[in-house]
Amino acid sequence: MANVEKEILRQSAFKPLVWKRFIDDVFSPWSITKDKVDGLIVLANKFHPTSNFTVEMSEKEITFLDTNVYKGQRFYKESSLGVRTHYKTTFQ
Image (cartoon, rainbow, N blue to C red):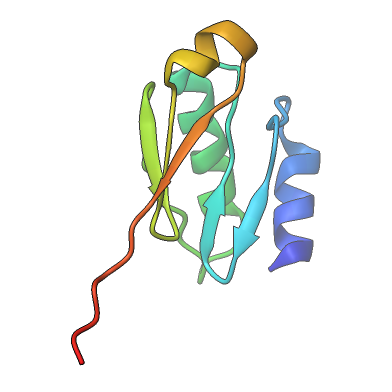
């Protein structure tokens, strides 16, 4: 999958700020418009007939691997994203 991602990003006119993948989930903030990201998804889905890329986008927050990444006060002051982790209580 890493080779497929590299080739898709190589062919794309736009590059992500970050690209982090765990199995089949990718966290990737972009500094382009939603329409341009949608164009990248169209390109990615044309790359191979058996691969299908989907996307969840938000201007404010997103969950990746049980971690909520969001724009809090620190983002507007220091350009740093905030994180909240989700964990389940266990009963004994």
